[in-house]
Image (tube, rainbow, N blue to C red; front, side, top):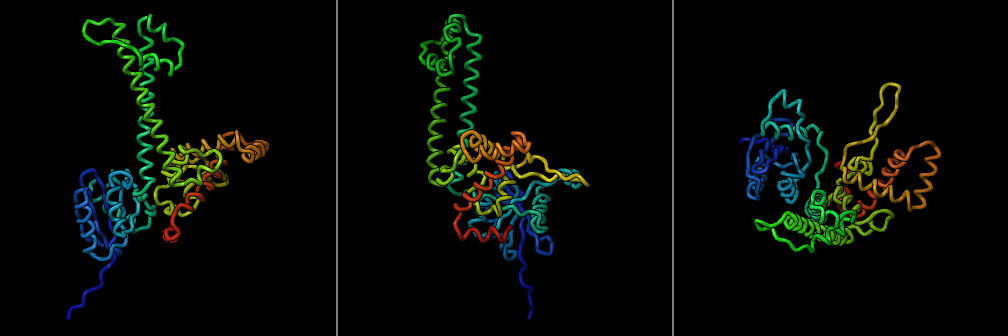
Length: 360
Protein backbone atom coordinates (compact mmCIF):
# COMPACT_ATOMS: atom_id res chain seq x y z
CA UNK A 1 0.00 0.00 0.00
CA UNK A 2 1.40 3.35 -1.07
CA UNK A 3 1.26 6.11 1.52
CA UNK A 4 0.72 9.58 0.11
CA UNK A 5 1.98 12.56 2.12
CA UNK A 6 -0.76 14.79 3.48
CA UNK A 7 -1.52 17.81 1.28
CA UNK A 8 0.37 20.93 2.25
CA UNK A 9 -1.25 24.32 2.53
CA UNK A 10 -1.03 26.40 -0.64
CA UNK A 11 0.03 30.02 -0.83
CA UNK A 12 -0.92 31.89 -3.96
CA UNK A 13 0.27 35.04 -5.66
CA UNK A 14 -1.63 36.91 -8.37
CA UNK A 15 -0.32 39.55 -10.76
CA UNK A 16 -3.40 41.40 -12.03
CA UNK A 17 -4.05 43.11 -15.35
CA UNK A 18 -7.07 44.48 -17.16
CA UNK A 19 -7.82 41.40 -19.31
CA UNK A 20 -5.87 38.56 -17.68
CA UNK A 21 -4.44 37.54 -14.32
CA UNK A 22 -1.31 35.47 -13.82
CA UNK A 23 -1.15 33.30 -10.69
CA UNK A 24 1.54 31.22 -9.01
CA UNK A 25 1.07 28.57 -6.33
CA UNK A 26 3.82 27.66 -3.89
CA UNK A 27 3.96 25.30 -0.93
CA UNK A 28 4.65 26.42 2.61
CA UNK A 29 8.19 25.10 2.29
CA UNK A 30 8.76 27.40 -0.70
CA UNK A 31 8.44 24.78 -3.46
CA UNK A 32 7.00 26.05 -6.75
CA UNK A 33 3.77 24.20 -7.55
CA UNK A 34 2.59 25.80 -10.78
CA UNK A 35 1.76 28.83 -12.89
CA UNK A 36 -1.53 29.68 -14.61
CA UNK A 37 -3.03 32.55 -16.60
CA UNK A 38 -6.79 33.13 -16.53
CA UNK A 39 -9.21 35.64 -17.95
CA UNK A 40 -10.26 38.52 -15.69
CA UNK A 41 -13.90 37.44 -15.45
CA UNK A 42 -16.14 35.33 -13.23
CA UNK A 43 -15.34 32.15 -15.14
CA UNK A 44 -11.62 32.87 -14.90
CA UNK A 45 -11.89 33.52 -11.15
CA UNK A 46 -13.69 30.19 -10.70
CA UNK A 47 -11.01 28.43 -12.72
CA UNK A 48 -8.31 30.07 -10.61
CA UNK A 49 -9.97 29.04 -7.34
CA UNK A 50 -10.31 25.44 -8.47
CA UNK A 51 -6.69 25.42 -9.64
CA UNK A 52 -5.43 26.61 -6.24
CA UNK A 53 -7.63 24.07 -4.42
CA UNK A 54 -6.27 21.21 -6.54
CA UNK A 55 -2.89 21.57 -4.80
CA UNK A 56 -4.37 21.43 -1.30
CA UNK A 57 -5.99 23.70 1.31
CA UNK A 58 -5.58 27.37 0.40
CA UNK A 59 -3.78 29.17 3.24
CA UNK A 60 -3.62 32.66 1.77
CA UNK A 61 -3.41 34.52 -1.54
CA UNK A 62 -1.44 37.70 -2.14
CA UNK A 63 -2.90 39.99 -4.79
CA UNK A 64 -1.36 43.02 -6.45
CA UNK A 65 -3.66 45.96 -7.17
CA UNK A 66 -6.63 45.01 -4.99
CA UNK A 67 -8.01 48.50 -5.43
CA UNK A 68 -7.97 48.41 -9.25
CA UNK A 69 -7.56 45.41 -11.58
CA UNK A 70 -7.47 42.99 -8.66
CA UNK A 71 -10.73 44.13 -7.07
CA UNK A 72 -12.85 41.51 -8.85
CA UNK A 73 -10.70 38.49 -8.02
CA UNK A 74 -10.26 39.72 -4.43
CA UNK A 75 -14.03 39.91 -3.96
CA UNK A 76 -14.49 36.46 -5.51
CA UNK A 77 -11.89 34.82 -3.27
CA UNK A 78 -13.28 36.58 -0.20
CA UNK A 79 -16.76 35.23 -0.96
CA UNK A 80 -15.26 31.73 -1.11
CA UNK A 81 -13.65 32.14 2.34
CA UNK A 82 -10.11 32.55 1.03
CA UNK A 83 -7.85 34.90 2.98
CA UNK A 84 -6.56 37.65 0.72
CA UNK A 85 -3.65 39.98 1.51
CA UNK A 86 -2.66 43.11 -0.39
CA UNK A 87 0.84 43.03 -1.92
CA UNK A 88 2.74 46.12 -3.00
CA UNK A 89 4.28 46.36 -6.44
CA UNK A 90 7.69 44.77 -6.91
CA UNK A 91 10.63 47.03 -6.11
CA UNK A 92 11.94 48.71 -9.26
CA UNK A 93 15.56 47.97 -8.40
CA UNK A 94 14.69 44.30 -8.07
CA UNK A 95 13.03 44.41 -11.48
CA UNK A 96 16.03 46.06 -13.09
CA UNK A 97 18.33 43.36 -11.73
CA UNK A 98 16.16 40.32 -12.45
CA UNK A 99 13.87 41.43 -15.25
CA UNK A 100 10.10 41.82 -15.48
CA UNK A 101 7.46 39.19 -16.29
CA UNK A 102 3.96 38.39 -15.08
CA UNK A 103 4.89 34.96 -13.61
CA UNK A 104 7.86 36.53 -11.81
CA UNK A 105 5.63 39.22 -10.31
CA UNK A 106 3.05 36.63 -9.24
CA UNK A 107 5.75 34.50 -7.63
CA UNK A 108 7.14 37.57 -5.85
CA UNK A 109 3.65 38.27 -4.48
CA UNK A 110 3.33 34.70 -3.18
CA UNK A 111 6.78 34.72 -1.57
CA UNK A 112 6.01 38.11 -0.03
CA UNK A 113 3.06 36.47 1.73
CA UNK A 114 5.17 33.47 2.72
CA UNK A 115 7.83 35.73 4.25
CA UNK A 116 5.22 37.65 6.24
CA UNK A 117 5.96 40.93 4.46
CA UNK A 118 2.39 41.29 3.18
CA UNK A 119 0.06 41.83 6.13
CA UNK A 120 -2.43 44.38 4.76
CA UNK A 121 -6.03 43.19 4.44
CA UNK A 122 -7.61 44.82 1.36
CA UNK A 123 -10.93 46.62 1.35
CA UNK A 124 -13.83 44.29 0.64
CA UNK A 125 -15.40 46.84 -1.78
CA UNK A 126 -18.77 45.11 -1.67
CA UNK A 127 -21.04 47.33 0.40
CA UNK A 128 -22.48 50.79 0.87
CA UNK A 129 -19.08 52.39 1.41
CA UNK A 130 -17.99 51.21 -2.03
CA UNK A 131 -21.13 52.82 -3.47
CA UNK A 132 -20.18 55.96 -1.56
CA UNK A 133 -16.70 55.86 -3.11
CA UNK A 134 -18.21 55.73 -6.60
CA UNK A 135 -20.50 58.65 -5.83
CA UNK A 136 -17.52 60.67 -4.57
CA UNK A 137 -15.59 59.84 -7.74
CA UNK A 138 -18.46 61.12 -9.87
CA UNK A 139 -18.76 64.23 -7.70
CA UNK A 140 -15.03 64.93 -7.96
CA UNK A 141 -15.06 64.73 -11.75
CA UNK A 142 -18.20 66.91 -11.94
CA UNK A 143 -16.57 69.58 -9.77
CA UNK A 144 -13.46 69.50 -11.96
CA UNK A 145 -15.54 69.85 -15.12
CA UNK A 146 -17.58 72.68 -13.56
CA UNK A 147 -14.37 74.54 -12.71
CA UNK A 148 -13.12 74.09 -16.27
CA UNK A 149 -16.40 75.42 -17.64
CA UNK A 150 -16.19 78.48 -15.36
CA UNK A 151 -12.58 79.17 -16.37
CA UNK A 152 -13.41 78.85 -20.06
CA UNK A 153 -16.44 81.09 -19.60
CA UNK A 154 -14.26 83.85 -18.14
CA UNK A 155 -11.58 83.29 -20.79
CA UNK A 156 -14.06 83.72 -23.65
CA UNK A 157 -15.54 86.75 -21.94
CA UNK A 158 -12.12 88.42 -21.58
CA UNK A 159 -11.68 88.46 -25.38
CA UNK A 160 -15.33 89.04 -26.29
CA UNK A 161 -16.49 92.09 -28.27
CA UNK A 162 -16.73 95.26 -26.21
CA UNK A 163 -20.52 95.34 -26.04
CA UNK A 164 -20.59 91.92 -24.39
CA UNK A 165 -17.54 92.45 -22.21
CA UNK A 166 -18.81 95.76 -20.84
CA UNK A 167 -22.20 94.20 -20.09
CA UNK A 168 -20.79 91.31 -18.04
CA UNK A 169 -17.72 93.02 -16.60
CA UNK A 170 -17.31 93.04 -12.78
CA UNK A 171 -20.16 90.57 -12.29
CA UNK A 172 -20.05 87.47 -10.15
CA UNK A 173 -19.89 84.05 -11.74
CA UNK A 174 -23.51 83.29 -10.88
CA UNK A 175 -24.63 86.56 -12.49
CA UNK A 176 -22.63 85.81 -15.62
CA UNK A 177 -24.11 82.32 -15.85
CA UNK A 178 -27.64 83.58 -15.35
CA UNK A 179 -27.27 86.26 -18.03
CA UNK A 180 -25.36 84.15 -20.55
CA UNK A 181 -27.67 81.15 -20.23
CA UNK A 182 -30.58 83.30 -21.44
CA UNK A 183 -28.77 84.57 -24.57
CA UNK A 184 -30.43 84.04 -27.92
CA UNK A 185 -27.86 83.58 -30.64
CA UNK A 186 -27.08 81.63 -33.78
CA UNK A 187 -23.87 79.94 -34.88
CA UNK A 188 -24.81 79.64 -38.55
CA UNK A 189 -22.21 80.54 -41.19
CA UNK A 190 -22.17 84.25 -41.84
CA UNK A 191 -23.28 85.19 -38.32
CA UNK A 192 -21.54 88.10 -36.68
CA UNK A 193 -18.74 87.68 -34.15
CA UNK A 194 -21.07 88.99 -31.45
CA UNK A 195 -23.65 86.31 -32.27
CA UNK A 196 -21.03 83.54 -32.26
CA UNK A 197 -19.65 84.74 -28.94
CA UNK A 198 -23.12 84.86 -27.41
CA UNK A 199 -23.74 81.33 -28.66
CA UNK A 200 -20.52 80.06 -27.06
CA UNK A 201 -21.18 81.87 -23.78
CA UNK A 202 -24.69 80.44 -23.64
CA UNK A 203 -23.38 76.91 -24.15
CA UNK A 204 -20.71 77.26 -21.47
CA UNK A 205 -23.17 78.82 -19.01
CA UNK A 206 -25.70 76.04 -19.51
CA UNK A 207 -22.96 73.45 -19.14
CA UNK A 208 -21.85 75.04 -15.85
CA UNK A 209 -25.45 75.10 -14.61
CA UNK A 210 -26.00 71.44 -15.50
CA UNK A 211 -22.78 70.42 -13.73
CA UNK A 212 -23.71 72.52 -10.70
CA UNK A 213 -27.08 70.75 -10.49
CA UNK A 214 -25.27 67.40 -10.75
CA UNK A 215 -22.93 68.30 -7.88
CA UNK A 216 -25.84 69.44 -5.69
CA UNK A 217 -27.76 66.21 -6.35
CA UNK A 218 -24.67 64.15 -5.55
CA UNK A 219 -24.16 66.11 -2.32
CA UNK A 220 -27.68 65.19 -1.22
CA UNK A 221 -27.17 61.55 -2.15
CA UNK A 222 -23.84 61.37 -0.31
CA UNK A 223 -25.45 62.83 2.81
CA UNK A 224 -28.20 60.20 2.68
CA UNK A 225 -25.60 57.43 2.47
CA UNK A 226 -23.50 58.86 5.31
CA UNK A 227 -26.52 59.20 7.60
CA UNK A 228 -27.46 55.60 6.84
CA UNK A 229 -23.94 54.20 7.35
CA UNK A 230 -22.48 56.28 10.19
CA UNK A 231 -24.82 58.87 11.73
CA UNK A 232 -22.54 59.06 14.78
CA UNK A 233 -19.84 60.73 12.68
CA UNK A 234 -22.12 63.64 11.83
CA UNK A 235 -22.81 64.23 15.53
CA UNK A 236 -19.18 65.20 16.16
CA UNK A 237 -18.18 68.88 15.81
CA UNK A 238 -16.61 69.86 12.52
CA UNK A 239 -17.61 66.68 10.67
CA UNK A 240 -20.04 67.15 7.79
CA UNK A 241 -21.24 64.74 5.09
CA UNK A 242 -18.32 65.43 2.72
CA UNK A 243 -15.66 64.96 5.41
CA UNK A 244 -17.41 61.90 6.86
CA UNK A 245 -17.68 60.29 3.43
CA UNK A 246 -13.94 60.74 2.83
CA UNK A 247 -13.11 59.06 6.15
CA UNK A 248 -15.55 56.21 5.51
CA UNK A 249 -14.09 55.56 2.06
CA UNK A 250 -10.57 55.50 3.53
CA UNK A 251 -11.62 52.84 6.06
CA UNK A 252 -13.64 50.81 3.53
CA UNK A 253 -16.57 48.46 3.99
CA UNK A 254 -14.54 46.37 6.45
CA UNK A 255 -13.03 48.80 9.00
CA UNK A 256 -12.18 45.82 11.21
CA UNK A 257 -9.19 45.24 8.90
CA UNK A 258 -7.52 48.16 10.71
CA UNK A 259 -5.99 46.48 13.71
CA UNK A 260 -5.40 49.61 15.83
CA UNK A 261 -5.95 53.34 15.87
CA UNK A 262 -2.29 53.85 15.03
CA UNK A 263 -2.78 51.91 11.78
CA UNK A 264 -5.71 54.19 10.90
CA UNK A 265 -3.56 57.23 11.68
CA UNK A 266 -0.87 55.86 9.36
CA UNK A 267 -3.52 55.23 6.70
CA UNK A 268 -4.54 58.90 6.94
CA UNK A 269 -0.93 60.12 6.95
CA UNK A 270 -1.13 61.74 10.39
CA UNK A 271 1.29 59.46 12.26
CA UNK A 272 4.74 61.02 12.82
CA UNK A 273 7.58 59.21 11.06
CA UNK A 274 10.69 58.45 13.11
CA UNK A 275 13.71 60.28 11.65
CA UNK A 276 16.19 59.72 14.47
CA UNK A 277 19.88 59.10 13.92
CA UNK A 278 22.61 58.71 16.55
CA UNK A 279 22.06 61.14 19.38
CA UNK A 280 19.44 63.08 17.46
CA UNK A 281 15.90 62.00 18.31
CA UNK A 282 13.21 63.55 16.14
CA UNK A 283 10.14 62.81 14.05
CA UNK A 284 9.19 64.24 10.68
CA UNK A 285 5.91 64.89 8.89
CA UNK A 286 4.25 61.87 7.31
CA UNK A 287 3.56 62.64 3.64
CA UNK A 288 2.20 59.17 2.82
CA UNK A 289 -1.23 57.69 3.37
CA UNK A 290 -4.64 58.57 1.95
CA UNK A 291 -4.38 62.26 1.14
CA UNK A 292 -8.14 62.69 0.82
CA UNK A 293 -8.61 61.43 4.38
CA UNK A 294 -5.69 63.61 5.50
CA UNK A 295 -7.40 66.66 4.01
CA UNK A 296 -10.67 65.68 5.74
CA UNK A 297 -8.93 65.59 9.13
CA UNK A 298 -7.34 68.97 8.36
CA UNK A 299 -10.79 70.44 7.64
CA UNK A 300 -12.13 69.10 10.95
CA UNK A 301 -9.14 70.47 12.87
CA UNK A 302 -9.43 73.93 11.30
CA UNK A 303 -13.17 74.03 11.96
CA UNK A 304 -12.76 73.04 15.60
CA UNK A 305 -10.01 75.62 16.15
CA UNK A 306 -12.62 78.27 15.32
CA UNK A 307 -15.82 76.88 16.84
CA UNK A 308 -15.09 74.17 19.42
CA UNK A 309 -14.35 75.46 22.94
CA UNK A 310 -12.21 72.48 23.97
CA UNK A 311 -10.09 72.71 20.82
CA UNK A 312 -9.67 76.45 21.22
CA UNK A 313 -8.46 75.99 24.80
CA UNK A 314 -6.06 73.24 23.70
CA UNK A 315 -4.72 75.42 20.87
CA UNK A 316 -4.13 78.34 23.22
CA UNK A 317 -2.28 76.10 25.69
CA UNK A 318 -0.02 74.57 23.04
CA UNK A 319 0.63 77.98 21.48
CA UNK A 320 1.77 79.21 24.90
CA UNK A 321 4.21 76.29 24.96
CA UNK A 322 5.79 77.60 21.77
CA UNK A 323 4.14 75.45 19.10
CA UNK A 324 3.25 76.98 15.74
CA UNK A 325 -0.15 76.74 14.10
CA UNK A 326 1.07 73.98 11.76
CA UNK A 327 2.41 71.93 14.67
CA UNK A 328 -0.86 72.34 16.57
CA UNK A 329 -2.83 71.23 13.51
CA UNK A 330 -0.68 68.10 13.23
CA UNK A 331 -1.37 67.23 16.87
CA UNK A 332 -5.09 67.85 16.43
CA UNK A 333 -5.28 65.68 13.33
CA UNK A 334 -3.69 62.83 15.26
CA UNK A 335 -6.21 63.17 18.09
CA UNK A 336 -9.13 63.42 15.67
CA UNK A 337 -7.93 60.27 13.88
CA UNK A 338 -8.07 58.42 17.22
CA UNK A 339 -11.60 59.71 17.82
CA UNK A 340 -12.79 58.79 14.32
CA UNK A 341 -11.23 55.33 14.54
CA UNK A 342 -13.30 54.53 17.61
CA UNK A 343 -16.48 55.52 15.78
CA UNK A 344 -15.54 53.50 12.69
CA UNK A 345 -14.76 50.40 14.76
CA UNK A 346 -18.24 50.60 16.25
CA UNK A 347 -19.64 50.17 12.73
CA UNK A 348 -17.98 46.74 12.31
CA UNK A 349 -19.96 43.67 13.41
CA UNK A 350 -18.63 42.20 16.69
CA UNK A 351 -17.82 38.84 15.05
CA UNK A 352 -15.49 40.58 12.59
CA UNK A 353 -13.29 42.17 15.25
CA UNK A 354 -11.55 39.00 16.44
CA UNK A 355 -10.00 38.04 13.06
CA UNK A 356 -8.59 41.53 12.72
CA UNK A 357 -6.74 41.15 16.04
CA UNK A 358 -5.36 37.78 15.00
CA UNK A 359 -4.21 39.18 11.64
CA UNK A 360 -2.55 42.12 13.37
